[in-house]
Image (cartoon, rainbow, N blue to C red; front, side, top):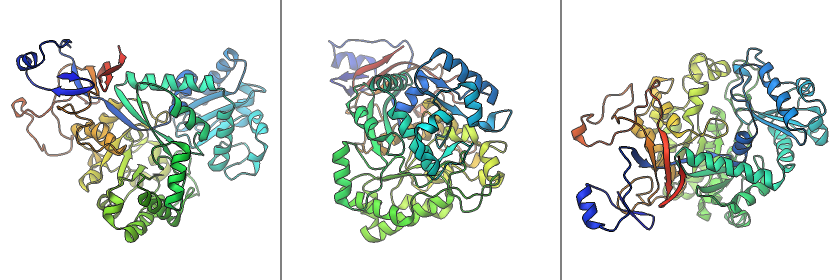
Length: 510
């Protein structure tokens, strides 16, 4: 592969390449695997960096272990708010989240903010609650329990505002360095007033790094003028991402048609169909990509109804031309899948969710029952209906690990929902570029004319494989010239990134 001025200019055999480019610098990769770099279409950069540089609770197996880590962190860091991330009570022996009393015992007198793994609820100390007194009158506050919904958003905003610029910048550096080390050349920040706030977005847009950052802002608008004004005011790229229609299954805040199996609740709906329709219409008329966070089936009902109203008013081609997005899109029925495919809606999905919480004994089955849980994340049906998939992580919710995400899509815990490794890889590269509005036909590939944005991997032998439960749709004979990928079976080691290059510039070198 020959690269000039950040662009791939030739791909082929060695001898013609040397004849065409006799003065080129030659880099022999000694058999390493070269592939288009990944794009992660759903991350929270500052939150990921705070987890990488702070208190990571994602590997704890018990509440006791979690509280021990809080104690150790408090001793090592005597000043400031204790911020932790990633606890999941469904994995713990005790089976319950931390209480206010637990946190007061572990870190007396300290402000403590511990986000649940799905980022839709948080355990906080009384000291932190006392610093935001209005929280007790805010929806989502139940004394002694983790904060949810608006109460959680209120305290999260106050906690992040309490950090200084240096802390936030160090977190961003750590997050983007980590992305580059995973072979990722671009990420989509899913920000919003309830996620990170305007200050974080402004600082992130000023922050310089070799990983490209596309910023989404999750705030609903009603008119095209309002959409254009908000976009210009904030300097963001689109009005979508985590614009919440509902919450999450783990925190019992995803909006369901029928109650949770383990709770007498149907979750929370934040936006109705009319608000969704107005936002889609306004963004379409303004030429801006829109999007929504949607997980539960009742939330999806509202989304499809809202999109349908916008399509009825503006026409399907006008709506499809904008490439509007849905984040997560976990609970869809066949009719909804068909409609979204017809309207050109892109699904930004996270196979790591199924890997972490799917299966007959996972959190999904606990929250929904085995039958409903088996319907989640129907990637194969979505792809077959023409819905363009973009695979990401929602980091720090699941790890920033694109090969693991590709493997999870190919080995979905519900066999009928699996897609091939090649389709999953495409969704994490070309599909993710397209989800960010890049429709040049070459980004996410390595052909002449494409940006020289690639990663070099230590990967061993390459294989050609279809989805494990599908008929082979192409020849696996090497002579067929179907591009191979590293083996992605559950027992195979995942590739190790040796170098990441973005438009010809090395942004990571092992």
